[in-house]
Length: 390
Image 1 (spheres, rainbow, N blue to C red):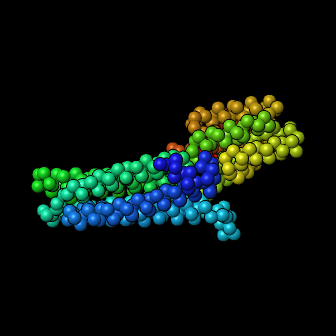
Image 2: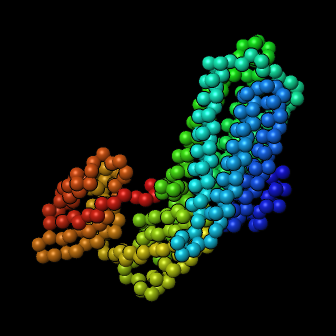
Image 3: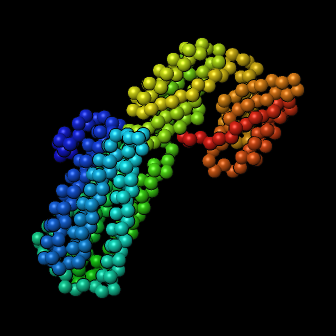
């Protein structure tokens, strides 16, 4: 079924980083969700009226809210697919993250409402609830449909790595569990005359709220600006270092303006004795390779370094060892030496991990002491920074 729907809704379905393809997958998920949730709403509403069950009717309106979530998914991908304009030169891709955020809020609201209704059932239990074969059949079909929707959206989420579709998939899973609990409550009440609907409802509500919080955090993270995936970073490093002109990279930053709309910037180290035109051409080729391979914009700053200066290379190695004595997680780059008559300035960038046990002033003092142990005439000139990718 998923393959058939993909053929109908999505052109060039294997180009997962293409914004148009992502919009196609999102539109397909939204359209399927709207249709199926409206069908489930109507069927459960009829079943709830026949069985005089408030929990079944409440579950029906839960499906109506899911149809609203599907509308949010549909609109989110539609808006995310809009081209760049004067006010938004990097496009509208982050609407996809906003859609995931909206669905997370809906999940949280459903969980809160379920806690309220379940508490009311505990305080005022209902004794006139009846279960019919018709109502039970509809609820079982609903569980099967929601389970299929979970796997359907999960498969789409894995293809395009969309937080919005992951939230939609988890929303379907929580509905599947909620309806299963409703069936259990009706069955137990029917056979034992013990009404545990409310307690089961609270247990499910807690699970739904936990899921809502988890999807909310995952959808919010890219809007705030999270670190890129390690696999993606490793791929960039490998691509850049594959050029024989480049001997090292640092200060890699991935700017995320929505899936398929990324900007990569980094510093590439090249030998200082190379012809400047030749080095510039090599960097241009690397930029084009990155853009073609990762469907992004790439900007590379070229850093000339001395590879054939034995004194500089040995000094860099010795200072790197001294820095590691302070902490093995510290590293240096952009190393330069400026010699004077009375002292020598060693200029470098010092990379410090996040939540490091020392503040920058203490780190600067400790590293300076270690450098002075090598030679008192060495004056370290450090720029302390944090990595944007680790």
